[in-house]
Length: 115
Length: 112
Image 1 (cartoon, rainbow over the protein chains, first blue to last red):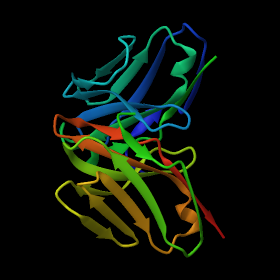
Image 2: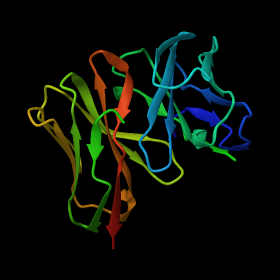
Image 3: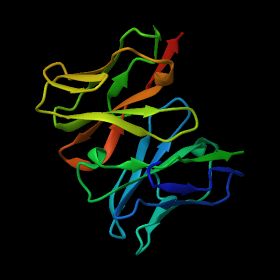
Image 4: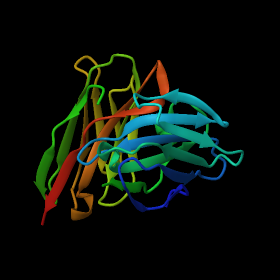
């Protein structure tokens, strides 16, 4: 149990729809990162939020957007869903921006299926 | 991925040692990590090594880093059936320390 919670755990959406995924960071953590893990692949970095500002972004189109709230929880929004967006979406929380792997804790993920 | 590569599959007998290998291409790696993912679960950090170290041991886990060859390995001693999972190698780089770059994962199957 890492203290990082994601909701919902599973979701089915239709192509073209919009989706919002949520992440509550571990107590005391001010940084949230989002990753997309397609079936059979390693996680791919989407973006990171540090103190409510986007701190870095991976190679994802603008229809992937995010938000971090004053309590450091975060949302990932995806517009105009495509079939290839079907994946496990992982959230990781940490304290601070750098050397993230040494202190990042991952949630259980949200399994998104686009049909 | 961004050039972190792993073999896809490894099968070992319970009680044997497992060695999972990873290669990376960027010489600016700062930290290298091993994560474990069990079915339907998120990622669990197993261990990590700073790039100026050669070896790190943590109970049954031994990490070896060959920086010249850009090769990282994870040895699990006395492998148990509960070690069956997917193992991901990952790195962070000096110019982008905020993100983890993962390999595609190695599925470890431990046979009784």
